[in-house]
Length: 144
Ligand code: HEC
Image (cartoon, rainbow, N blue to C red; front, side, top):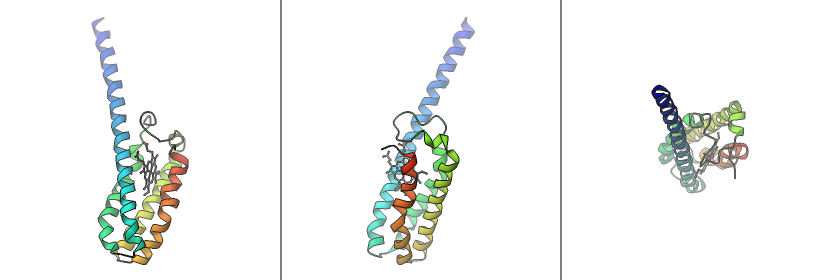
């Protein structure tokens, strides 16, 4: 009896721990994605004005670091809760990762242009980033 009681307590604690961990991972990815939105907004006026794109390198480094870890922020089972992540993510994880890898490649291109101080190349790459790279993932994998 005693032993069974403790097994049940341990099992429940484990479940609660899992739910907590998933709540954290949802909050963490949403916070990160909000920050990505802020980076994109902050870079727009610089792109439009063909301004000092070199100053954007730290933002692009943060974006690279975040997107490189993004798939890890979508562990199995983290589709339930306070999230707009669609179940299709876990049904098509290979594609989700491929879409994200293209995002990483685009941020690398933006960073290369920024580091070179090439405002025209930066503006050209920036112009398509939101719709073609952020949007490519949101269309299929983020609920409205
Ligand atoms: C590989 C897929 C993927 C890519 C690439 C991606 N996103 Fe998202 N984004 C998502 C998903 C999925 C959600 C919903 C996350 C959730 O609610 O758990 C989301 C949510 C967001 C949110 C809302 C965060 C919140 O909860 O307040 C913002 C803002 C956002 N993304 C911005 C961006 C920007 C900007 C880019 C491009 C620089 C981008 N995303 C690229 C998948 C992606």
